[in-house]
Image 1 (cartoon, protein in one colour):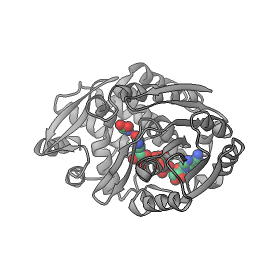
Image 2 (tube, helix red, strand yellow):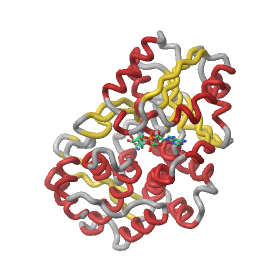
Image 3 (cartoon, protein in one colour):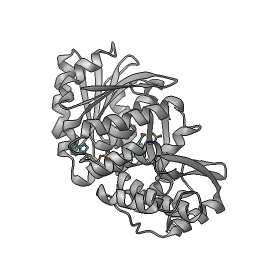
Image 4 (cartoon, protein in one colour):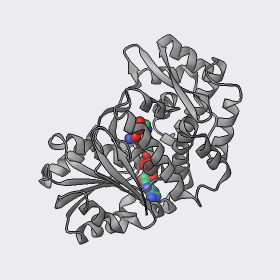
Amino acid sequence: METVTVNTASASYPVHIGPGLLDETGALAAGVTGSRTCAVVTDSNVEPLYAARVCRSLQNAGFTVRLHVFPAGEQSKNLPVFGEILEFFARNQLTRSDLAAALGGGVTGDMAGFAAAAYQRGIDYIQIPTTFLAASDSSVGGKTAIDLAAGKNLAGAFHQPRLVVCDTDTFRTLPEEAFADGAAETLKHGLIADRDFYRFLMSEDIHARIDQVVRRNVEIKAAVVGEDEKEHGRRKLLNFGHTLGHAIEKVSGFAVTHGHAVAMGMVLASRAAVRLGHSPAGTLQEVQSACRRLGLPVECPYTAGQLFAAATADKKRDGGNIDVVVLEEIGRAKTVRLDMEGLRSFTEAAL
Ligand code: NAD
Ligand code: GLY
């Protein structure tokens, strides 16, 4: 088992990474909390695969366990399903000294984490990521959210988990496309922060080196959120590919998954950045060939007009402005502040 410690202004917690860790969940959770009741939230795909093992492990460590299952998919990351999780907590008389656990991918982690942030003004929770994406990105850093009709992640809270338990064996049951979603956020980390990691991804079999890959992802993310927990500055760099990526998800009605949309978004942002003089020539080709190597799309099926309309509802708008992330070189990124006309030009240059 490998452990990375995340230190933010509001919390410090361990991220344990390794094979077979689901069976250690109870012991690891008991080590960070005095809670006796644990409310496990999971989705309908993950429940038959892993819920029994996690619940058994928690029970063996002395927890009384309650389980809530919601229909899998981004389409569930909304107010009604969020409300059902809060009602489940209340029905089971969870108190502020009890614990919630998010077992699943980023949808589960974001939504159960937000429910933990909101219920009784905040209860403790742990993350048990079962997708490569959740392990490498969403389970770490404390961003929790649900989607609103106007766009992705428009309601949420910063609420750090007490613990992250990442059993890398769980990725074996992921469909190839879902694994590629995690590769997109992994590539993002290399492109914005670590050229050597990017080169590693371009030369190694990431399936065979998965524990090492997750660990480096978590280290990169921990360093960023340790410096800027609430996204006032450096954390914005983690949004590389996300302004247009979120627009693609929205325009597709969430038929395009988050990781695939981020991959397209990174390609589009790189094309616009090269054309507008923010990134060196050759950046686009590097990002495109990296996406292809990792089984990710490089073409976007939507028009600039569709993406601009969707992106203007993005939460990262600050007054009339929006920060887009561009690569200064492979391994180093910066933000560029655009007004709405600037965003229109950026989107047109992206396609
Ligand atoms: P997801 O949670 O929908 O999981 C993808 C699919 O895989 C689902 O159908 C799920 O049921 C299934 N699944 C999960 N684990 C499985 C396993 N081990 N075996 C088989 N199937 C499994 O999506 P995701 O890609 O994990 O996460 C995407 C979400 O994460 C988006 O909503 C995105 O906005 C969010 N996100 C949040 C952050 C953050 O910092 N909070 C960062 C990145 C992404
Ligand atoms: N995935 C973006 C962030 O955590 O800030």
